[in-house]
Image (cartoon, rainbow, N blue to C red):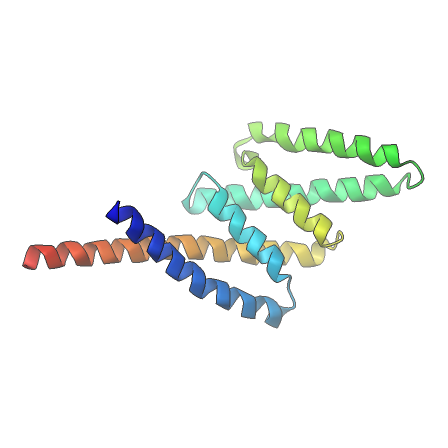
Length: 164
């Protein structure tokens, strides 16, 4: 229980600090801060951690962006037939899920996060992509710096207990 609380507190501290920094970076670079937080969320939610989780999250976010653009541009081919958009959305949603049989695309929520960010960004992938990517890197830094801090605190506690 105490170890779990130490990890949670450490991740909370580093996430708080880096979230503030991300807000400043996003504004400074003209990026979408909310999309960056979606990138952070993707890393935190991915069942894989470390570099593997970062890679899987990146691949799924990117694939979601591509799928969203397929829906946006595919729907634009027949704007007077709304049914085309609905059918296309259903087919693409199926494909977004079935692609998870491939390891690098196995995190389905990441795919949907990437698609949602692209829709919310009105298809402006040139703005959404760097926002998600930097946010993903910040998420990696938040969690892993928190885990590092927790291990340092645990080592310090163990050392203190031994010297008493």
